Length: 113
Figure (cartoon, helix red, strand yellow):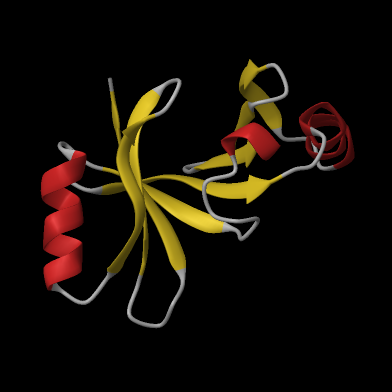
């Protein structure tokens, strides 16, 4: 089953971005991994921040879909018209692949390790 795992923004300074979204918008911080990544409770979907080290989309916002098996999901997406940008590869917390849909919008497929 594929589901939206998170909406991903890139942040030059994750700690500063965490303060903004936590204190300025009142989002609840669920997870933080130093200056690499942070995840907030977005009320039904996760809002995530990726630091420069974890920027897999070239600075563009992207939706991330959790899938059962990344390579198989990427193959299906490519057969349907997506273009593979990178991966599948092991990230610090997941296996992931970055693709672009037929209109050029980036998206991430990931599965927990």
